[in-house]
Image 1 (spheres, rainbow, N blue to C red):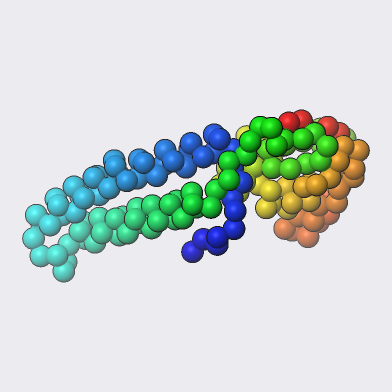
Image 2: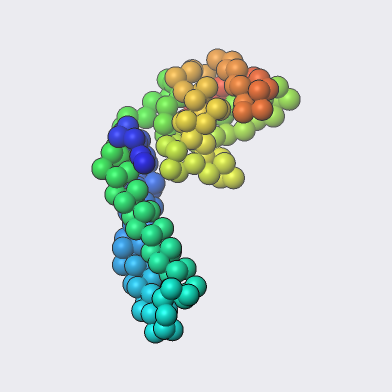
Amino acid sequence: MLATKELVITPEGLKALEDELEQLKTVKRREVAEKIKIARGFGDLSENSEYDEAKNEQGLVETRIVYLEKMLKNVRVLDESELSTDAVMVGSRVVVKDEDDEEEEYTIVGSTEANPAEGKISDESAVGKALMGHKAGDVVNVTVPSGAVIHYEILEIKA
């Protein structure tokens, strides 16, 4: 299931998790219960694919609810006052230059908030893990899942 390790999260990430949990507990549970009720009306449950599908969906919803509740018990909301520009940490925005002299900016977030398309990378990803704790001016070697090594120079750390 989910380990009991502390999950560092931004206030926005916490709100997103709480909103998802609330939506699942209220709206989605009701929708699935209605689907089950309708499917029961179709007769013999042993050969009722609509009923089976609705029960499977109910199981997925309940599993996600339990997962989110456990996650929220181990969450620590990142306080803006904790952010520092001395070294990369969760919540830092980091400007890096790669081997091709291309600059990129990443925001280091907890794993639940990661969205590479938005430049939000997890502190548990290869790049995020390699950047953690380093300072501006450091050159960081990142071994990516393919086995290749990418070199990043940290140009700036923003809070």
